[in-house]
Length: 292
Ligand code: NAP
Figure 1 (cartoon, rainbow, N blue to C red):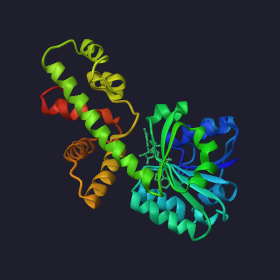
Figure 2 (cartoon, protein in one colour):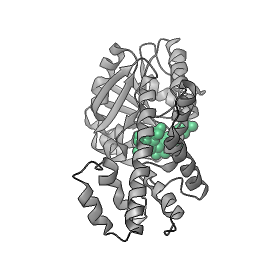
Figure 3 (cartoon, helix red, strand yellow):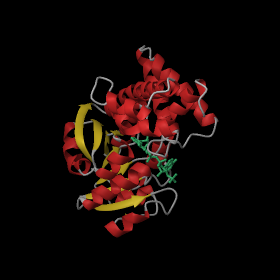
Figure 4 (spheres, helix red, strand yellow):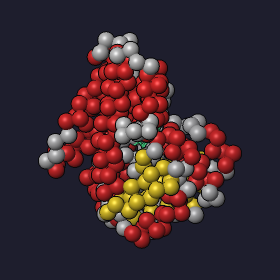
């Protein structure tokens, strides 16, 4: 299949590489030239703008930062809409607002272009290994067209409802992550303050009910108080903003998500926007009088 990629950041670059490795003909564009330079060796062709990507693709994947960014790459002057022929399928894999997703799909639909929302979970590791979890909203027939492309990027692909539903599920995912990261951060800080052998604590807990992906994969960063990039604090705060908006629309109370969003706002204000989300432990450390 001819697959276009718009956005070659941490996620998009790795995902485009896996789609190319799966044998699809990939054309790509990134706003800042020179990202994901390894794609050339995989035969990926770099185009001049999103419209040029769309003009040579059956399926166009967009994976950029936030709602206004997706709007820009879809509907900007040389956006996807300007190159896509009727019958083209757009798959937005960014994490953005469910309501805006529905609006974008309606605008594309008016020119005969179909859209799925297919946000992902699994982090930069999942993007590199092709093991992402993908939540898909949209028409069943469009998902079946997209499936060979999605299968190159992820291992768990779930059709969760009509357009926008994938983003709503992703919001749920990010709310759960807020609690998971804050819970592990508090546990690590308590272990440190209590003078325990914290590495031993993590091992001891790994077979019990407190076991989690965050405990297994991110507690080491919290212990070292060093947060090399996996998923940026700034992006998780953006995602919690989406979730809290959905909570307002639905009358849901999300105290942990709201607290996490505020702690992340403080981290961003102190220059940690590009740290990994496990840096919420930095905030809990500081509150507890440990080294920030
Ligand atoms: P990233 O490394 O910061 O890359 C962002 C990408 O979006 C870059 O290619 C950037 O282009 C592009 N972009 C941003 N604004 C743009 C605009 N207005 N016009 C054109 N291009 C624009 O972010 P990422 O980690 O790949 O995340 C991408 C999406 O995946 C986000 O929605 C994020 O929430 C989601 N996600 C990320 C992870 C993760 O672990 N990283 C996990 C799941 C989901 P430039 O290079 O020019 O800046």
